[in-house]
Image (cartoon, rainbow, N blue to C red):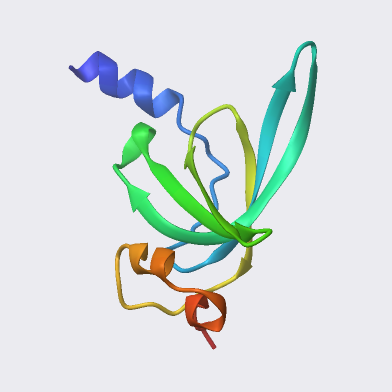
Length: 113
């Protein structure tokens, strides 16, 4: 069991920014199409963080052309190049799943001053 923990510690990314639920982030994702690969941005609000350590994931939600889009990213996965924090949010919940039912200004998160 100790060997597995050592291997997991070695594969953790060192340059992970500290962000929390309610923050608006830009996620740089590596997309591979055939032989080519490129970096695609996905900007939205972090509505959930799950697990911990090497298995940590976070869910980002945005509204694109009137349709809500959610993507789950592994924090330490090779497909995530980097995570930029656009703005900090002020929330009182650990999971913001209630934003799925809200439309327009009601779906906004207050900014931290």
